[in-house]
Structure formats: C-alpha cells, structure tokens
Image (cartoon, rainbow, N blue to C red):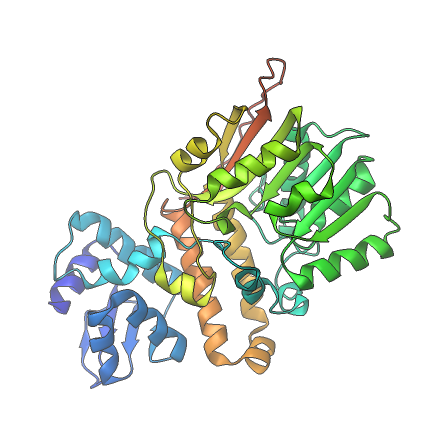
Length: 397
C-alpha cells in the first residue's frame, strides 16, 4: 500500500520522496526522506493520521531529511491528484489537518488567548519584525524586508480607512499595539486598542508611556463584547488577525457589537485568515497551537453582517503575501533554535517549526486565504475604491 502511494506521489515530484521504516527498510528514492523512528508510530498514524503524525513529529519519532515545506507541498499535490478518499490514501489523511485550516484562535475564554500570546514577549521579539506585528505583511516588492512589508501593510490599512486628524480609531485585538501607537503618532488620531493578552496589555501600556502618547492612545484588557462599557463611539474600526478568535457561530455577535460602537458613516476594516468555502478545522492546531481556532469562510463573514446596516465596499485577498510572511517568520525562528529549546524544550521547538511550515504550505496551495473586508456603517457612495496591480509576480514559479 505504502509503496504504491510513494510511487504515485513521486510521479509528480521531480525531487523524489522516500519513506524509511523503523527496521531500516526504505520505500522509494529521492532527495527528501520521511523517517519513522519507532514501531508504534506507524500504527498511531494509521489509527489517527492527523494526531498520530503531528504528535510523533513533535516528539521526534518522525523526522524529515530534506525540505519539510517541499515534502508537504508534494503530498498535497498527490492528494489533489487522487481526487477521492480511499484506504490507500495515507498521506491524504496525514496532510488533511495542514491543508484544511491552520487557523488562529477561536475565542471561548481569555485563557485560550493567553495560552498562545502569553508565551512571553521575548519569544515573539526573537522572530517577529521590530513592530511586533503578528499578522500578514504586504510585499509590494518581493525583495522587501519583513519590517518594510509590515509597514506597507499598515499604510494600506490607514489608506483604506482614510485616516485623518481627529478620527477616533478602535483596534479590536490590538496585539502589541503597532497600529494604535503609529496612528496616534502620524495621524493625530485618538487611538484605542483592546486585547485579552495580559502580556500584550502591559507591553502596550509601557509603550504608550515611553512614547509620550498618554491622552492620544489607550489600551484595555477587555473582551470585545464589553466594548460598549467604554461609553464612546468610533468612526474608524479595524481588526487584524482577531476574527479567527471569535469562533464558529459567534460571528453575528461580533458584528452586532461593532455596529453598536460605530458611528453612522464610519469605516470598518476586517483583516482575517479565512476560507473560500466553509470547512472543518484542525484538531491538532486546536489542541496545541490555537485552542479552538476557527477560520471563517467568505459566506460566513457576509452572512454574519447581513441586516445590521453594514455595506460592503471592497474585498482583497492577500494569500501569497501571507505565504511570504510565514516564510520570513520561519527563517527567523530557525535562527533562534537554541534559545527556544533551552527555554521551552525540543518538543515545543519542533511543534512550532511544523506549525510555521505547514501554515506557509496552506497559503501556497490555496487552502487558506487572507481577506481584507472593508465595510461602512450605512451606504457611502463617494468612497474612492482603488485597485493597484503589482508589476512583478510575488513568486517566480
């Protein structure tokens, strides 16, 4: 069974893939090799492909000699070429968790958010850009540095929101504060951010103080459902990489809250990982990376806002930009391996290596997408929608 799978897979993979079993037998030939290092692992994978493979890789009971990303891409291409599920499709089941949804957090409890984001600011500072932006960048030039691409992403957001002095901006899920800090400095905007992460909250409070932005920027340790308690309304609202936290079946409530705290005629930019069509989510990701993570489809987003007075102005898809962002994050993450292993252990390091790699593959293969929805509260017929075309492809092939 495995021999037939490897043979068919290698028909579409010029660099070749082999599988080495615990007894030393090797099936297939190529530049890349999957090593199964313990007897029981193969049984675990066959019994539960998703959890079996991922947990074995984390423990080091499965290893990859070669390029992990290329191996995952080749397996996905094999899955797509088969066209249907069968008992022989071991890799179909094995890779399904990767290419159906490496999502971000489904918000159920604050502790789920803190489990991921409160790993420590120092951990994220090691491999994010200097602004500590943990979301998709925009590479208007594929040779941009990560810092430049993250700055370009924020500039595009500000342009879409038509920010100007005197605006009252709310950032739902503000992370480490790059948007509220920058807009308060550059635009004379009154900027407010909320987060459920205590680490992020303390970090942003300190940054506001050190930059002398008291009275211009503020941050709350708050769930989005409590926003009306602030007692103010905003004419510009943005949410970047937080909607994935909201959770299946709760999107309507999110939009109801946004409607309540927005002024009529205001603009709302929603930046989220998503799906073209609704699909299930990864159990491994929900258990180990983002508890309860859920990626909404376009339909789910549009349906959640229906009848609440929102008007859709524009949708962008930045899929390949997230692929390049994740590639850069992984490159930086690999350079700090010793620090991560010493602080968190080898299993944690392998878990994050697999997460970053498989996430990149999911965007490269078109399983995941990055959408920016621009909406207004009420109809705005004078909004100057612009479409820019980049003169060179993001990828060479």
